Image (cartoon, rainbow, N blue to C red; front, side, top):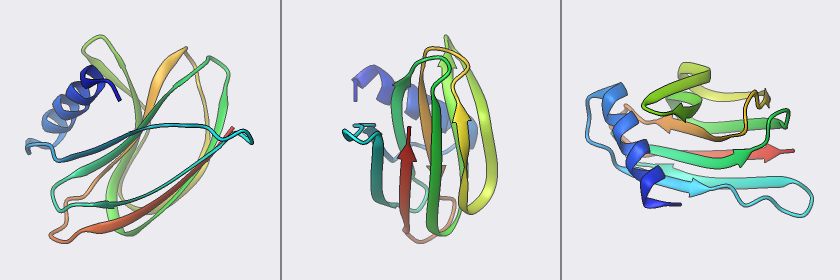
Length: 126
């Protein structure tokens, strides 16, 4: 994860929530089979973010489950603008397919607004 992307994630989180960012930002490392799996514990008031470059037209099947509801989004940055192809409030699970509209770094992000840590499991498949 580049420090620039981490800084952008922290700025985006602070702008969206007004809270200081406590981050777990992970780069997507695809397996030879085109899969990526990640497990994390998201601190109270913190966020987890998984990011990776996708070529235009790439389809990624995503599936996540958490121990409790968290705000979830898939986003990318265009300059200072944040674009959200997917945005869900208070979601404990979700699954769909994202089709990349642009060559861009796409990020899957969860924000824990609860008072306790929440476990998270994510699977991505190309």
